[in-house]
Image 1 (tube, rainbow, N blue to C red):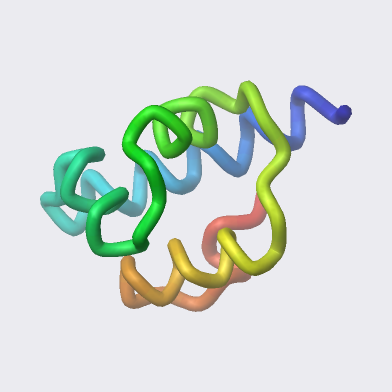
Image 2 (image 1 turned 90 degrees about the vertical axis):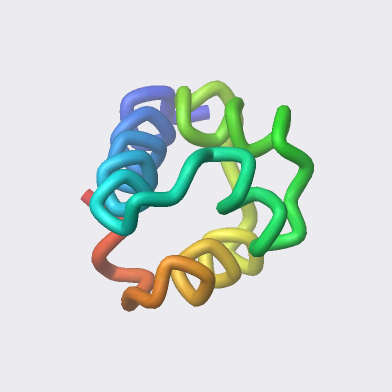
Length: 69
């Protein structure tokens, strides 16, 4: 697992989420992802699937490339 990449993606998700004024729990609910799983994604503790990355991007109303470092 590339921890630095997972952390960078997680940080980008946090930045985008905060810029939209969404609490983590609300993003998780809208993206249909468990809140604890979303927490691990944002902290870079796990590698997420492309499917989940696209779902998060769609929920945030951004292009998936904006979530990539």
